[in-house]
Amino acid sequence: MHSAPTWDPHQYLRHSGHRTRPFLDLLARIPDLPRGDGRPARIADVGCGPGNVTTLLADRWPDAHITGFDLSPEMLALAEKDHAGTTAGGGWLDFRPADAAHWIPEEPYDLIVSNAALQWVPNHPESFPRWIDGLTPGGTLAFQVPGNFTSPSHALLGELCDTPQWRSRLGDHGRRFVHILEPADYLARLADLGCEADTWETTYFQLLAGEDPVLDWVKGTALRPVLTELADDANATHEFLAQYRDLLRKAYPPGPHGTVFPFRRIFAVARKAL
Ligand SMILES: C[S@@+](CC[C@H](N)C(=O)[O-])C[C@H]1O[C@@H](n2cnc3c(N)ncnc32)[C@H](O)[C@@H]1O
Image 1 (tube, rainbow, N blue to C red):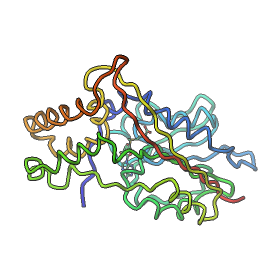
Image 2: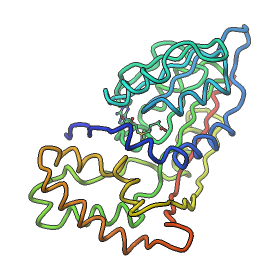
Image 3: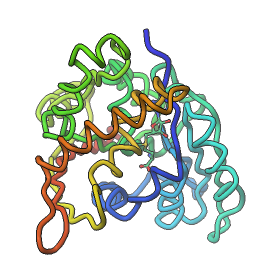
Image 4: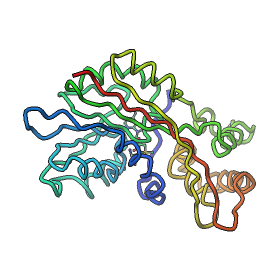
């Protein structure tokens, strides 16, 4: 059992443009929500992070009551500070602590959405039946997860963590266990639950600027477990980052227009029967 990594919302938001795009692509595939009785939509954003993506839900459903759930106090604090309260369209946005591994919809939702969070949640497909149960008829479960765990950025991180020097220091804490399924498996699981399911994948060829931009990117996500484990040891943090940076420089050399960081993402949209 590993404790959850500490998140740094400001580091995470440094690449918010590239990180937001898949959410917009997901949003584009979410059908209209069931609001037969004219009430505002009820939406849950599971693993909402700093809440910037949650606000995009308010743009699409202006009068909705939207609740962002997250495990990280750091993320929730920033989300609360920057985004909680009445939305421009007269809706409402609030944030609450919850562990997605055990979260059960506490009231009927028209939409349960999750962006770039379920990869941290072991066995999350086991929750799909409870989440679909918690949807109103015609409601939607929609999520996006990274599908890049075999890419050089992750493979090199795993290899570095497995060297004797870091294995003895980090134990299993640096390792990323892969909890995602492939698109075909998500499709089968969601269709088995009686949903109209749509899954797909996209690889974004992200052009990053600046020096060591891939290292900067993973500092906001994949490196969180290592950075959390080494948090009280500045020398070890510096040394780990220097070794990883050198590996990343070879794997992702800068080109004439910047550094290309290909990033595969997996999407699923499942609509419950009316
Ligand atoms: C990469 S961030 C994504 C944040 C946001 N959804 C976005 O798209 O910008 C991953 C988020 O998942 C949250 N998370 C990780 N494990 C979780 C869990 N078991 N339950 C709830 N949130 C979790 C983290 O705290 C973090 O805020």
